[in-house]
Image (tube, rainbow, N blue to C red):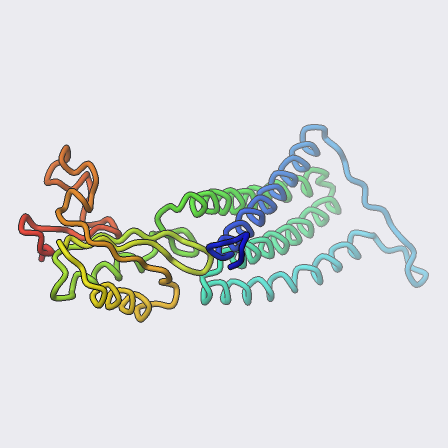
Length: 271
C-alpha cells in the first residue's frame, strides 16, 4: 500500500480478471461475426497450389500442418496454467487458460475447415469457426459476468463458478463450535487471491482476546482468509437486517446459505 492506494493493490487481480474476460469475449464475438458474414455472403475461399521440390502441392496441406503444430503449445500450457490457477485460486490465470483453450479449439476448427474446402465444401471453414466461436463466446461471457460479480463484492464462488465457495460456510461452522459463541454470521467477498469480510457475533460483549481467537482460527483454516474483522451484534435481528418482517426472524435466510449461522430463540446455534 502507498499514499495513492491506501488499502493496497489486491483489486489489481480483479481488474486484470475483468480485462482478460472482455478480451476473451471480444475474440468470440469477432469470430462469430466473421463466420456469419462468410456464410451469409456465400464467400467462397480459394486455396491454391504451390511448387515445392518440383512438385505441385496443394497449399491446404501446408496450412493444416502449420495449424497442427500451432495447437500443441496452447494445449500443454493451458493445462499447466489451469492446474496452477486452481492451486492459487487466481481467476486471471484461469481466464488465460480459457484463452489457450480458445486458441487450440480455433486451430482444430481451422484444420477441419481447410479439409472441408479441399473436399469442395466452401462453407466448411466458416461453419467450423462459428461452432468453436460459440464455445469461446460462452466462456468469455461467463468470465465477464464473474468479474463484474467480484467487483460488486458478491458471494465468493469456486474458481470454475460452478458452486459457492465452501470457505465461508466452513469458517462459520468453526466459529459456531467455539463454546463462548452464541451465534454468528459470516460475510466475505473476494479481493484478488484472498477472501475478506466481517464476522458478526450474536454476543452482547466481545473481548479483544476473543476477537483475536477468531482471526487466528480464520488464518489457520485457509491461507486465502485474510483481513477478517469481528464485531459483536446482539440479537438475531442485528445479524440479519429486516428480520422482523420475515418468518422466523431470519430475513428469508435458510440453512443452505453458506454465510448463514442458524440461531435458536435463545440465541445459541441450532443443532
